[in-house]
Image 1 (spheres, rainbow, N blue to C red):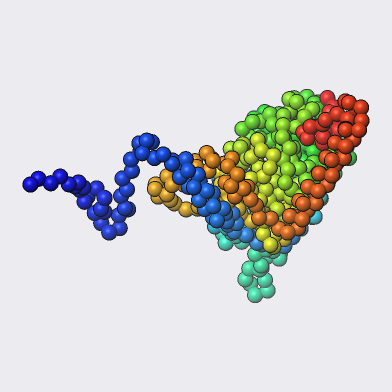
Image 2: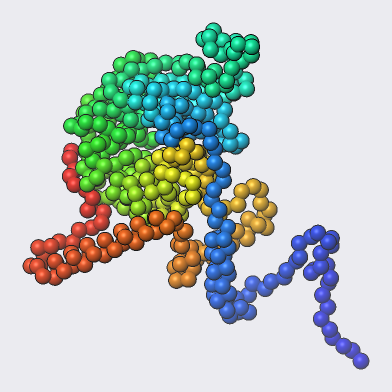
Length: 473
């Protein structure tokens, strides 16, 4: 009698060693899987829940400042160097990899209003309320524990009575700047040219300085008492965008002797940032709780209005990829936006963090750094659920598969609800509900007015044009 039986090799499904990964054999024939979509939806739901569970964006808090962190700048060629300025006139150098302060300088009398580095990362420039721009040398090999004590002992206050060296903070206060430029008014911001040795500083006017001259090369003025912020365009470095106290946004060209365009908004803009990958676009942080993205070729209408903040937006910075940017607000939160979306994709906050005054993306777009009124510099992950450290090939493939599933079924109601849900402080939640109630009331009032008026007498106005007051050329 002959019997036919199924026979499988044990080596096909058994591990040769106890620590090996279990082998699975799958048949990819779609005819054998009639419920493929249903299974993928279930997997996508599990994937988005896992993503929400692992959202832990906070990495570390670096303390050391004794006053609010007012401004910050990062190096162009390294990932770990960060420079912060405080309201007590102190500048600190930070190493993000070790999360330590490598140098502290008593730079200005009063607030430090702006910081920037030259493209070679050899000099740091700072400005403040004392009407002075100072140029500092960035020496990567010079640390707090490797200072040339003998060179600084002549100042008289670096050696204590017992013959030993005094407090490190006292030694650091005596470090002299490489160069000093005297301005005519209190300065509010500073930025460096992307190629040439030029600076733009704002105060009562927009002044362009050269490293080797004691007077500004250009001085632009367009009918306002104070200019708040100015930034060079990364692709066309002769262009400068600025925001002023008269609610205006100005565009200037170094090749001309006068401003080229001016846009008036309903409220004041506190900061401006150019998109590094689409250099004709820039984003401004406004007092009306919104951020506005404009195309410099057509300033009559905003490209996008980015909402979700419930307080004035104080700073904005683009990621080097140009696909997203970060904004910080007076409402004690940090929000990340995609350039083509009007709502934030993530919001960061802590119980102890106070009003956030400045924020920056890291040079590799993986991290966000913020400075707040509670004197702390905080490091966050740009992707809240991203895992840090090395990952195996199998884990990378599993994560890519889950992301693909979420992207494929992101418009399903349940998946969208879980993905968009954000935990916010109770004060922010109450303020958001109040803003929503006010907006609904204004919308109903406008609809009633339109329904009881002559046709066409109450025109529709797009959200992207509401905040624009006037466009001057």
